[in-house]
Image 1: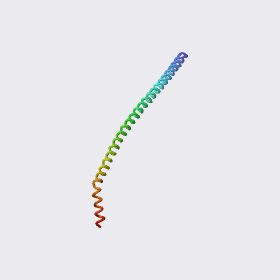
Image 2 (image 1 turned 45 degrees about the horizontal axis):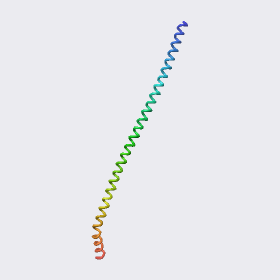
Image 3 (image 1 turned 90 degrees about the vertical axis):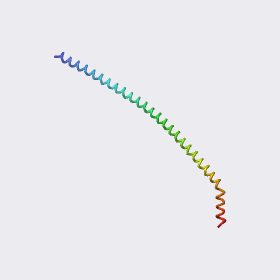
Image 4 (image 1 turned 60 degrees about the horizontal axis):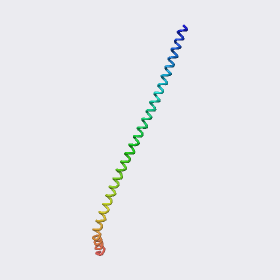
Length: 103
């Protein structure tokens, strides 16, 4: 009977060692997976940040181009108004003079 108990105890001890080893291996694998996940997260975050910076830069270029186009358009409009004003000034002065003097 002692032999059976010893065998059972030995089998139990071996099983406990195997369980402990399996638990340790599971913990190591979990740590490796978590490390790899963090590494991938950081890589994707870096790629996303780079892409966001590129998009912002492109949008800034587009906004600058739009602003320049509007500025040029405003200059053209102002020049047109100045030209019309120069052309019409004599007529307007004469009309105003006629209206004031005529009354």
